[in-house]
Image (cartoon, rainbow, N blue to C red; front, side):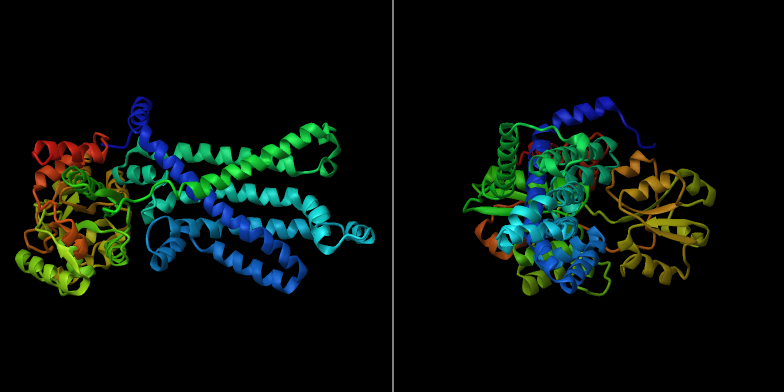
Length: 522
């Protein structure tokens, strides 16, 4: 079963997600304008300053060029390491990308002013400062505004990856769509981003027109407008600038947290979005605690760092995953031992409490297409590894590095796959569906397994450790807010909820609500 697109489905999704779309649109605008204003506040004065010293100009522009050459996802990752998750690292990343065109165009615009004009101005008795504001900046205005337009459009697009640092915005919908291979959901984020970029370009084009003197325009563009019209345009330009400042700053002031407040975090796939929403609604229904969500965190290590920093208070993850990657303990396939050691170590070393298992075990399930299973007579993991050199593996980058995954598979079975491709979680499924890989490292509760009609191979060697979902919560939050859920979710229930989101396109929050009602928890 391949990937499809339906205009009617997109329209239904747009209608059902409209309130959420509006919220994330304004969040996206808020973060983008704030990053752009910071770039302006630093880039324009610095661009002016370096025109006075060519050595400084080469150094500053060179550094800016190097910073912008860093891939955006790498820059965001570095920012998260030092600043934590949320909007701050996202704004910093976009600032770096918006800064260079503003800086360079300001420098170029000032340097393009004819020295004769400055000589005349000084001959008339103008000071250096008055020359800057009355001669240089008006002449350089088209250059500066062109840089701002480039920066604004680029910032709107670049801000989409803020979702991977838990900052949401319109990239949140793109992220959801990628996780479930839902074209309509991807477009729900991508189309507004494109329209927003066009809107920003239009606004700044009008601002450029308002601040550019007609005397600097080509003859065919001079309209000899009355002074009233010019003044009106300038007033509108000032009004737009003030509005941008209000949007950038005001958005950070409106959502104040209550005294009783808790933040639920989640990684970057459907299952934990659902469980995160279950916790959010259950806590809000049973207590007077205000619950926020920070979803889309890229890794377990990032989740735990966020908990240590107090950016999130609780998160659902998997026992075997945290046991190996966070605690760095030797591989252990005994379910009870893993849970007991995990609970003790997290409490003693991190002051984090571990809930009872939620009920489902989202372990690895090596999976192949039906024709591959038939061709090689594959039923178990042992069968798979016997023919591994003839097969192409598509797996997450994490799977290629983890002690409990590919390296141990190869050493245990003394063999290697014919080809290994490191892929995004959802891209694995499109790759195996299109025949580009033969086997993937699926998860037991993945809804996409049934969507693509894949065959799960039995782990007859008990190779993979237990990956029971558990809830991690900072101890001080547990002491203050003890009214939390201990597990009730079976593998079948989790797989069914995943299917509702990934296959039927339902909102994870709605699926979570229905589960709570069916279980009599609210």
